[in-house]
Length: 306
Image 1 (spheres, helix red, strand yellow):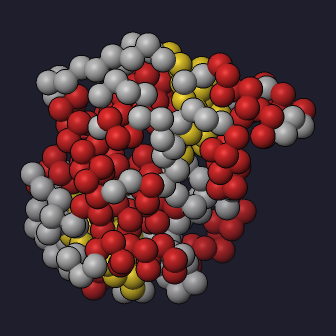
Image 2: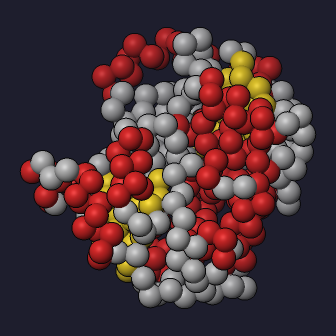
């Protein structure tokens, strides 16, 4: 993956389909222990949002590569006292080898990328969650031995996760269906971009019918109905989203061998039931583990170790 050295990773759209497949292959090889790249580099974690999986998986990935991660919580840096983001980015550029930014507004991520010459990684914004989508694709690939021709159905809010799944599935030839209540659809420009990438080779569908969306699907996926920063809207959203809950009845309408995915944290009894999340078809914990493997492959590629 030498072609990724020094590049930013702000969106899956920054990569070609071949590069996405290459990252997934490298992640699988590294997970199996067949490839063990090393890079003694330093990764900075600038997280404006709470995090468990992203923070820990990036930290462990960097450690396993032979490097180090530094947690740069904005509340204990000069950003909390009003230092401009551009100034922070230029200073960190002189200390670090890469930086992962987890924030609300994608404009903040783009500011970092503009002012820092080191690789800048999108560890989540309100618009996209590309590292999560890489882990999701790896999980589907592990389960079915392929991505081409599989069907992933996402049910719930047309949020950052939905955006990245639309792009990621289209890039690897998987069919992707997104079912949301009216008014909560993914951004039209993302849907159009995914359809252009798929170019008729795979299906890209947005619908308001969850039952039709899950028919014969190989993977059912959901996320919380109110993302970080939207908690005040949660009670208002519930009536709209209740028909989009992944439960035993909805799962029964998918393919018999379908798997269930959730990017976590999960609100049991809301977007997903306890029986499905903890059931035999759930691959949620494998999916969470795969965050570390795909991010390790990404870091190795961006930092020239792969």
